[in-house]
Image (cartoon, rainbow, N blue to C red; front, side, top):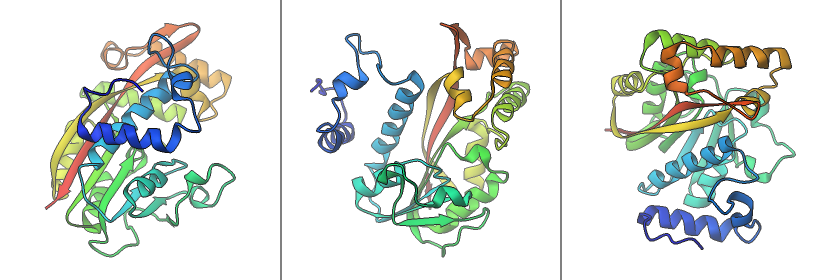
Length: 276
């Protein structure tokens, strides 16, 4: 096992738990790293996603909670991971009904309580949960103010919201340009807020921001487009728009042509907000 002397106590618990649960089945050293500690057999984007998810677990380790709901779960396995790790009553919720149905994928994609809901109203009583999580989903919401208010309502006093989402550049013109590129790839994309806008939305809903963390989200164009089944012609248009973006957006996304692909970096924010 790698030297973990520089890890915090929470990170050490996370590492020990992952090794106990998964290392008997997967040779992590062979599967993830090569000699230079670069990811192998996994894309840079997926490796970055794993690291960002571990940052979220590190923060959740600091809380005590008996119930949680994950809003906008999609096909993600994180609600299952939350239930297994924290032994708590776990609900996952999405607004696309077929994503809440049983699948023939891993059993970890589903937990006991699947809810199909339509924002802005979550079908739960006031103060029903200790924790609300929402990961890489809020940029699909048309009324983030009402989403924040609903999260505040279903949390008990003292409960927490853990929100992770893509964020826009601070420059308004670059933000509009970024949204247009995102929407060309995925028509369900609505709008990415800036970090400052997210803080305002949550504070107006009554939350107190306890933690803010800005994270890089490295991506490869081919995989990013393929996940939304973008055709060849539209993929070339995405390439043209990203490489030909304004100077301000290029400074934020940092696109580079590498081996026939285009690598670029989106920005994600992790916000931990408490209901008073």
